[in-house]
Length: 210
Image 1 (tube, rainbow, N blue to C red):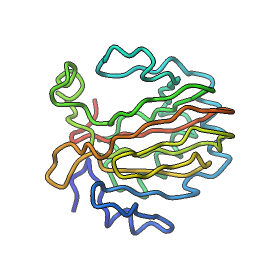
Image 2: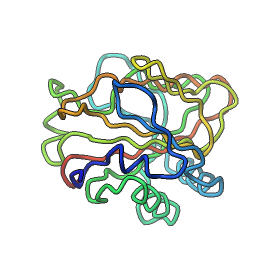
Image 3: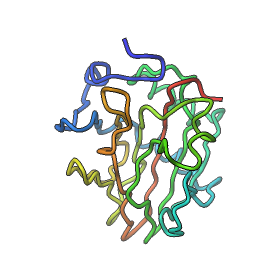
């Protein structure tokens, strides 16, 4: 069985409709229709109410590296409670290992350039972000709306691209089987060309969050 901060291919493949991305380089899955439209609308409204400029952990001198807006979702909100319930039902990860769910909003021209979700062990802020809860294990990302043009998520190393589709889940293990960080999970939230893009992101850690 996986540890409390982990999911597994076996667990995820057991979910109806779950599809594994055919690559030996990363453990990655997608599930269309994971969230119903009405829940997506509720979550988008929460993001609009509390959004702020997005930040990155390790500054790299590029002030346009991440230009979206972020919302730290209130865990007491009914829509967030329902989101968390649905995530736990498919990934079986102990809720104590989850970071607070975040929402992201992208306007025309906004993007998050190619990055990984794990914290670089050699990075300046690694100790700050990982000393308590440890490294990130899994990422679960959900598109909340269809986008008129642009806004795809591109995984260049494994030659896979996901177009925003309301309710679609994309999830991946940020580590290799030996526990080391997996650079093949490098991904780019590409520029929105027309319309808006809303996304939910939920990260999990090796140890309990807090």
